[in-house]
Length: 245
Length: 241
Ligand SMILES: Nc1ncnc2c1ncn2[C@@H]1O[C@H](COP(=O)(O)OP(=O)(O)O)[C@@H](O)[C@H]1O
Ligand SMILES: [Mg+2]
Image (tube, rainbow over the protein chains, first blue to last red):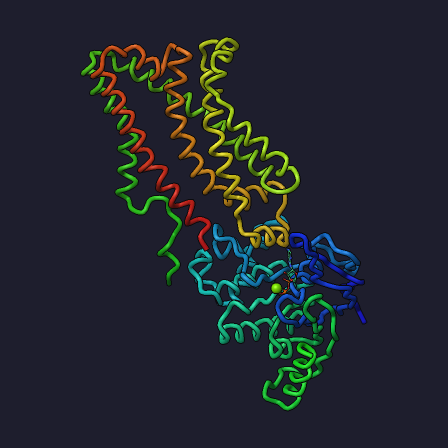
């Protein structure tokens, strides 16, 4: 396997008052370059914690996270569950912030932000502020911000769970299309089995308290995936039995 | 579509802006009328006012910079838990008690007055920025980290906007206390110029003193209403999601 990121016995324990909570226990796995990988589990199973550890946001944990040698911090993006847009910046400036941080030349910033505005139908909102947009539009800005730097790895933490189901479905299609075009590695977290099945090449099923890796399920259903097919339902049942044994 | 309806503007209407401009002229109108009534030279009175206001302005400028640097250095991390209790104690220091010593050291000078104004104005600004920044959404910080903002860019594009509401709230409180401290300090230090000196000089003349105090009140009220309150509203909208 052409591995881009490796977890080696990763464990994370939080102290809550006098109690110790093991959010993630002894997780080891490898994710391949260009793979669409989903962590699936109920809330509290340590999904966000794993993602934060892998992306470098959480720095104190046991075990090791290894990135392929050519990957550095500039190749990583993150799409947040609650968008995490900056209200004091316009849509345009929010999308361009990663490029500004990398001191990209002005023409490149214009080109990339323009590309993302176009791709997500945000062009006429370029000068708007995030608060003027609907939830779906805000998350489009969140994804556009993550894509503008042409990342090699994109982390997504329940990126669609704050959106209505129609908007979420539309954004899943957008994400799949983008992934098909340039094949970045996408590492996503979800608590929805159908969502995981629609998107993922492989699904890591996590259990709650402590957050343990139950099993990694390979999803070889042909794309685009027929959500009403017998195979889809069979895999859905299988995942369901793993999540709630 | 809705793009241009909720622009981040400080003044809701042009009338507001024009009114603000006229309020800036008010002190001059007031001076001329007042000088006429009190049979004083407009120039003298103007210089008193300029002396006082510039002391407050210099003190405020220094206090803002120091408070901001302090607040953003201490708002999180290990240093904060040590430093904040210390600042709490420092804040309770009764500044006027030290005035005689300061006067002894620096004389009846601008330095003495300005130093005391800084000590008065700085704490509300410092604590207001601090509490505001500490309440900031954790999400924003994480996105700043992921996006890779560092150094001066991080200060300019992230820390500064996030601290503006606290800065403005703190400035309103700080300057409110600053006006009072200004006149008091000038009287205690016995400066040769300024409003304190003016009130001292006319202590026997109740109408002149009352009129002076009234003028000052109107001025401060107008500055708040027309400059600080719109700034406050604007700063709240700045971080509104
Ligand atoms: N910063 C934190 N402090 C204390 N406990 C935490 C913290 N973050 C997560 N936890 C705990 O770790 C467990 C897993 O949390 P999380 O990774 O957010 O799960 P998920 O994203 O799957 O819902 C939960 O029990 C949660 O209470
Ligand atoms: Mg989570």
